[in-house]
Every structure is written in structure tokens, then in C-alpha cells.
Length: 157
Length: 157
Image (cartoon, rainbow over all chains, first blue to last red; front, side):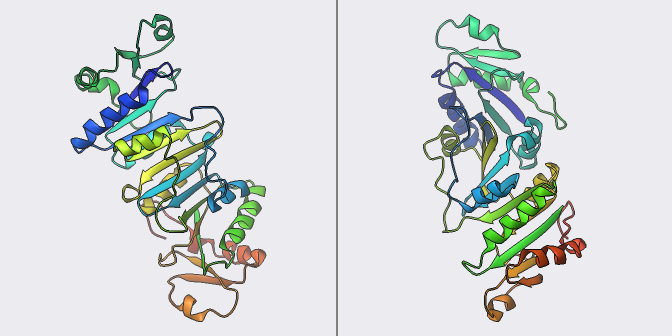
């Protein structure tokens, strides 16, 4: 399973870039997954009128709602380390994980820049590629260096 | 980890019953989790204006959004068997899992009945207790028979 972090300042095109990549991999029959942070601070204000939210309010650490095609899970964040999420993703047969944002995390990362943003880039650890958002060259670079992006169970690259 | 299924006809008080139980266990310092189905057919119509939904639309099988306190995960249902959900719950240190509904599943179950509902009860497999919703006696019965409700990794009871 490969883990590719994509960071960039606001409106640098992270979501679009990742979505194009997901589409390209999906066409190849590969299974992708994503991790991102909630954009505006706080928590997603979802489910507040649902039974699963009542379970959460009562004290449940994790709730899952199973729909016809989709399954929704909520968990207390401190129960779920990044490694545990990745372990779980791997157990489900995921090929590629895209992590959007969390720029302080030392994951092997691609930085999207529009103009010269040296100050931003210099704050980051483990930058593998600085990209202007052109997908093809980014994919090529990653595919030529998959070992850098390979995540090994029990954590670590 | 113990798995307790609670079934009953509509408005039999399943959510209230489970929530009381969750509160009682939380007070004891135990970690609980829940699984329920989406009530009205289809899928929860959440997140449709969010980036994580865009990831899903692009083809991502699983998305996670990390908020300040809560984490929100969506997955294609066919990627995630019940055993995989339980494995995941166990890896997070869950003590008790409450499964609300899914009455056809052969889990060790408690049936909530208001009146005589023999026809309903007779359709069910693995009924361990028929309850009128009085929590204390249900908890007592389960705690005296925890082996029946113990879930073993790799599936099965």
C-alpha cells in the first residue's frame, strides 16, 4: 500500500489534484482511499439528529451506520491513531492512500505550489516533489519511486 | 470484546435501551461501540458538499475526515464485512459492541417486546433474552453469560 501526502497552501488545488489521481488509478482497477482534515476547525456537524449521534452522546467511542451502499463510521479521534487508520485501510485491500493536508506530518509528500513559495516549502519535512499540479509528471515521479511511498504495517516507511 | 445485538419492532425502544446500557458501561470506565443500519433505506445523505465526498465520487473506496475531536469515515459497504468492522473495533480497545437492528443476523441477541410478539420472535435466530426494556435485568443476564456474547477474532462466537 502506498501513502502519498499532498500539501499546499489554501486554493493550491489539492482536492482537484488528488481526485484526478484517484480517477486515473480507479480506471486501472486500483483501490484508493483518502484521509483529510476537517477544513474549518471543530468537527463535522453531521448526524446530530441521528441515533448514531445519540449513541455517541451516551458515551460510545465508535459508531457505524450501514446504508445500502455506503457505511459511515465516527470515532473519537484520540482512539484512532494514523497508524491504526492505515492498518485498517490495508486490511480492506487499499492500494493507494492520499493524505490531504496535515502539512506538519513527516510523510513522503508532494507540495503543490502556484508561484514561488519557498518559505512554505522550507517548513516541511520529507518533501519528495514540488508540483505545479500537472498530474502526469507527478504520477510518473511517484511510480518511479514507489519504495519511498510504501507503508509497512506496524508503522513507518 | 462482547457483541450484543438488540432487535425489536419499530418503536420498541432499541436506541433508548442501548443508550442507557452505554451510559452504565461508560460510568464503569468501559469502552463501547455501536453498529446500526440506516433507518430509511438508501444511504445517509451526508457530506455531499464536502471534499471527502468529492474523493468518493472520484472513485475512492474509503475516506476519512479528521476533526478536532471526532473522526468521520465513509466506506463502500461491500468493502467492509461485519467481521472486519469488529476486528477494527477490537483493535481500538472496544469492550462492548451493541448492534442495533439487522434482525436476520444470527448474532446472540436480545429482543425487545412491548406486548406479546411471538410471531416476530419466532423468526429470529440466536435469541438469548426477551426483554421489556428493563435495563438492569438485561445487564445482569448478559453479565452472567458473557461467554455467549464473546466475539473471537477471525469471526464467530
